[in-house]
Image 1 (cartoon, rainbow, N blue to C red):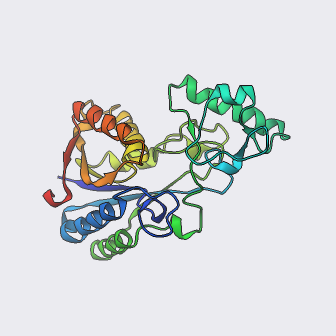
Image 2: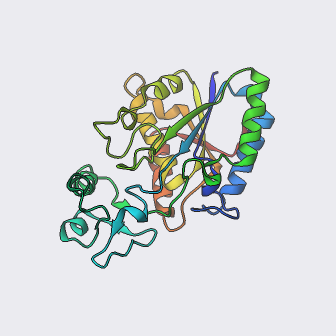
Length: 269
C-alpha cells in the first residue's frame, strides 16, 4: 500500500504559541502529534506533502484591502457580502483604481454566485518571509529527518500568493484569477496524490483549509476513481477548527465520512 502524508498549513501563525497571528486552539499539540507520527512511522510513509499559506500584507482577505465610509479598516473576522460592497459599507482602500474597485465587487459577487462562504477578513497572517510563515518547528524537523532517511524531498505546495483571491484549498483558489494559472487547479499536485492508495491528512484549520483541500482532492480524484474519498484518512487528533467556526469542521467531517473518508488518531497508524 502506498501511503502519502498531507499536512495542510502547519505554520507558526496558525499554532497556539506566542507570536502567532491567527492561533487555532489545539494546533500546537496537533503538530507535535503529526511530527511524532513521522518520526515513529516514517518508513510507512512514501511521500510527504506540506502546503504553505503564503500572503502579502495587502490581500483581499486582510484588513488593509478594505475601508468603511470613514476610512477605517474592518476588524478581523468581519464578514463582507456583495450587498455590503454594492452599498458602499465596505470599499477597497485603493478605490481610485477603477479596475481594483470593479474586481473587489466582482469577487464577492462570484463568491455568492458560486455558493461559497462570504468573504472573511482575517488578521494579517502567514506573510511571506515572516516567522509566522515558517513551518512549525517539530514538523519541520521531523519532515527533514524523514527526507534525509528516505533520500527524497518533501513536496511543498505554495498557495495564497495572489492577493486578489482567497486560497483556502491547496488545489485551487476560491475564485480562480484568469490571469494567474497558479490559482487554477494544481494538476501536478493532484497527479502526485493520485499515486497514493492512502492519504493521511493533518493540518490547520479543520474548518477552512483542511476542509477545502480535502473536498477538492476528492472532487479531482473522482474523475478516475468514484471511491476516491475512501483513500482519505483524517488524523482526527492532528487538526483543529478556527474558534467560532467549529460547526464548519463538524459538517466537513460528517459530509466526508458519509462519502467514505476514514478517521483515526495518529497513534493508530
